Image 1 (cartoon, rainbow, N blue to C red):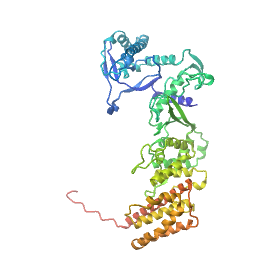
Image 2 (cartoon, rainbow, N blue to C red):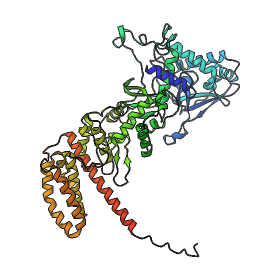
Image 3 (cartoon, rainbow, N blue to C red):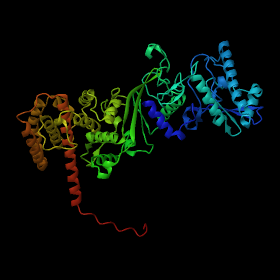
Image 4 (spheres, one colour):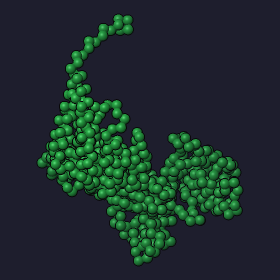
Length: 597
């Protein structure tokens, strides 16, 4: 199924894919052959690390090769193949074995080039290449700075030889010959369902570094069976997984294309990557927005509203044939690991994404807007706070991928997320929008309806944990209003114990608030009366049932109640400031200076 979806997508984006068995590579040297083929010059295209924007990169012939006697690529290869440059040790010395291997590789390379050139002698570029590699190559002066691993591409005049159609056709035939095995098999391809020549091994791996991994990066194979214990009935390679040359090459080309795409790829910050695409190639802004690191609140709200709007009679009869595909990959040594595969209608994917945003949106009391948090920041909120930001790479390993799985499948987040989040809240004594959003998400996806909370203050809630959080927020406001210049606040000293054991902590703080109210009644009587009335109202709801200890879920409701009350206080302050500003008459505009005017 996965290979079928990749090849189907490849058929639709064929114009964006490189030629068959071609891959994007950096070119370090250009061998510019004269039109008569009697001479050539080497042009350096190496650039310093700081000038990466000047790198010469293009799609060139490629296929996976391994072992000691590796065969050449057609035309574009390393300097060891193209120029016979041997490998050098760190001290610059060359062993006889390396020198002999460089000569062998250069002979094999020239033989393959001459095979192509003599098949298409009607092309002037082929005649020039044939003349050069027959007699002119020995007179070429190779600079000392050319290294054996440097990539060399060939051109005649203004034409890159590897771009010629005759080169692409011969290279495809060569790869099929190499990857068909010792004896070419023909059979039913599981991907396209047609009887065609079958691959012995997948011709192209995933590029090195394309899939993030905590271990050393390597190329990765999607299908790799090279030991009898791995294959059914002890059979290795692709004997039990028949894939034809065309489907195998196309599937891996599409996979590498998606891995190189900024739009259709999401790299996890610790390990792995998610690729996504749709059955129809028309872009879907809602899906692209979800994978964006900073989605716009207006776009999110539009998506939520569109999902809540009931479909009309005409829309209900219309069948949307579009589908969403998501592929989550990891890397284990040289093998790709398929961690998740999603194949759902696009409408279902958008519905799950809208529910994800709706379940974690947080109402900002100061701006009056609902804020939505990108997925990577939700995961990072379980990391360590470092004064002004979260410490990089401090998010629990694998949490971002787990949250993404939850979002796309419409499932509950992992159970460990709540404990990890509470641990950091207690340690940092910090409740911000990302942490509040993750708490809302965890509780809103709880099987207990009592845990489901609104994005803003619920004044009618009688849940003891939620009300206790509100009480702590009011007590903190009492202290801040009475002692605006205090260095250590209630949150700094008592938040962690209040969240865990509210009964003992809140009773003590309620008693201690008497001194603050005396100061308020003297200096700010209006504010003092409003805060005292609010505190007594909340305290009356739980005075007979203050919980002694709270479970993890109850602690989450306490923290949300605390945050909601703080946001409500901010909203009231903003409203009071707006009323005060509106009551002040606008000053008359000054008369413009006739000189400056």
